Amino acid sequence: MMTTGFPSYVRGAWRAFIWPFGEPWWMRSIRIVYWLGVIAVAAMFHLIIPVIVFWVVPAVTLLPVIRYFGELSEHAAAGCASEVVSSRNNLGWLQEWTIHPHGDGYHIIHHLYPKTPHHPLARAHRTLLAYPLYRYGGRHCYGIRATLADLVQSPDPAGAGGKDVSS
Image (cartoon, rainbow, N blue to C red; front, side):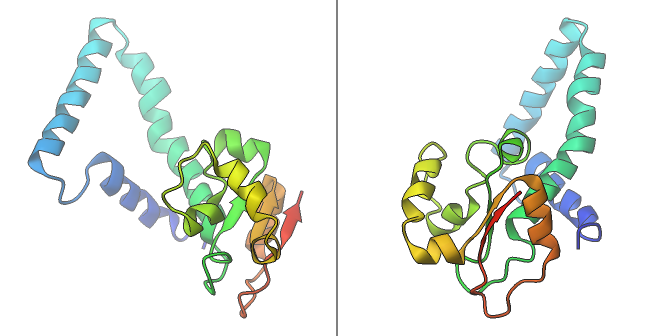
């Protein structure tokens, strides 16, 4: 699962973020003008090589790997019995700074309340921990090692095997 789905994930990310299928002509025009502006400013300040080396190359090599792991760590092997157990929270500090910025690690809350902005997610998580279904039914991983350990375990077929995993 971790390696076989990567090529299709990259194709999907390209279509969603770089050249979206079915995008209205005026949105595509804005996208093209934006990129032409970036290229023009970089050329004007003789920054074409740094832009390619420090922006384009990481965007097409490192970022897809990070985002793929991020998507995988949110949903894979989590089961689908309910909104609480169909994803996992990834709450380690390293995950927050590299893989899940702006509260993206509070992924169960995203599934429960998708319109919640990023700034109150930590408070919502602390509030929801008072409810046994969220506390014991959800998968809460604190650290990358804990997330990896949770990924390799098979999901509970009954969908009630959520847990609090610490690294």
